[in-house]
Image 1 (cartoon, helix red, strand yellow):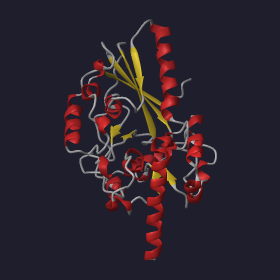
Image 2 (image 1 turned 90 degrees about the vertical axis):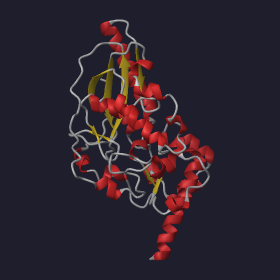
Image 3 (image 1 turned 60 degrees about the vertical axis):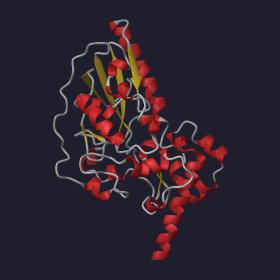
Image 4 (image 1 turned 180 degrees about the vertical axis):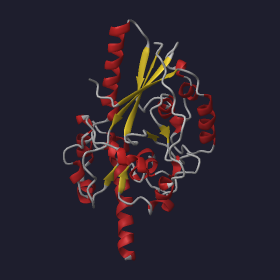
Length: 302
């Protein structure tokens, strides 16, 4: 068993509506310094550019909701990054799946993708009937919430497509909009990446974070889960079953002082197989300085 929790299939077609939305988002500069979002535009919207002759897009979901709650009074790490790097874990599973398909049906073309390639995975998940894209920009599964990694397999194998998710079950709820500390979530499912805590703590490589944003991060030093924590659909989230995604030993016990005194060599040793390495040691130290300043200012105000 490969351990995926859900699977859906869609016909491999050009994503015209998504192309327009992506172009508008990029034109407004909401990707900030993430210049890679501008590259390979045609590949993002057309699966046949990634796999010539593609006929089907298979989407798989893998739960990463941890068994334990985040500890209080500790620098906070987004839940998806508590365990091993999901890129490595899921890539092995996708390659195994493709090998098994070839054993069953013969020589087929196919490529597996997980997050780091030009694939609009949430759109394919919705087209596959696995959920809808909520106001917070996350894919939401009606029976299991949003704490999932999304994996995509594009293949020239013709498969029966599932019915797409045609309804948006967010309704009039706006909890994620109201709870977002930086007002990054717009009314029309438009996420301004240049206001998102995850962008500042992971993607932004500059030495400093804009002053107008520094008072809003709380204890987050890598990513942010606020919009998922307040989402009512995550009351259906169940604990993960993939051992690789369980919290690295001792990670949640690290105090602010432990993080601040961590050397660059120690950082590389501890997180060589973790998503946390994306921020790099310098980036995490910068984030810690912002968090420390916030807490210091709050103490002075009390």
